[in-house]
Image (cartoon, rainbow, N blue to C red):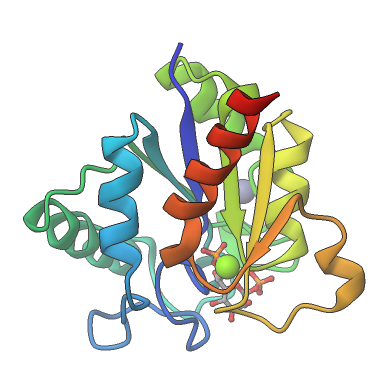
Length: 189
Ligand SMILES: O=P(O)(O)OC[C@@H](O)[C@H]1O[C@@H](OP(=O)(O)O)[C@@H](O)[C@@H](O)[C@@H]1O
Ligand SMILES: [Mg+2]
Ligand SMILES: [Zn+2]
């Protein structure tokens, strides 16, 4: 079994301009690519788990999402970062057509993470969920992820919400250092 970092997208990997769906709108957060590279070198599988209710809301199509995702994936590969899995939820309970669903994949539910855990043989306990919203923390917790991390690069987070995560850091750029510290403090025990 392998350990993984479950990565939220908007607000964590890229700036959340609100329902980002074009290459022009997609801005990697400073230091995010380098952080992913470092985590990959620490033997973490990298798994993207993103709510894309903009599809169900009719703001953009699944096809547009897939095109952008392909660009993101290749931009990362270009910089030596391989995403082991990409999972997205296109649904919304008040959405349109086939996307109007009370699904099990939209965070805070754990469906996307669970699918990845099964597909990629991931050890949830050894894994990390990082995101910018309480829903990310709750999704991680729902599947028994060992460590939940909130970043301050996305939606504003209240002190009440901060208490729900195991750690709060300024940006995903700080995650490799946090992981190193966690590992070294475990050794000392
Ligand atoms: O952060 P991840 O999961 O990667 O993606 C979230 C996005 O799909 C969008 O999620 C929306 O929330 P609702 O889906 O409308 O609740 C809003 O927060 C948007 O600003 C945001 O772009
Ligand atoms: Mg987010
Ligand atoms: Zn869904």
